[in-house]
Length: 51
Picture (cartoon, rainbow, N blue to C red):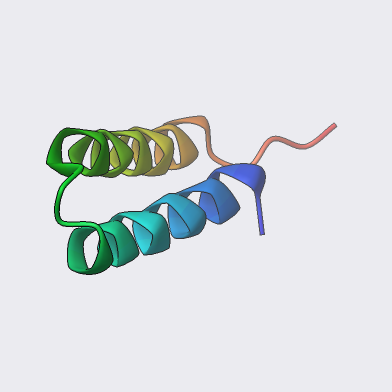
């Protein structure tokens, strides 16, 4: 697993958990979703690089 996939999963779980548990911090929770989507896009754009 690449760092981008791990980052995507962690941010997505944090976003879902924050959306259900901490309903007060709505803006920060949506920022987590944006970061998760950006990390997923970067993962697919960069792909696997071989050294």
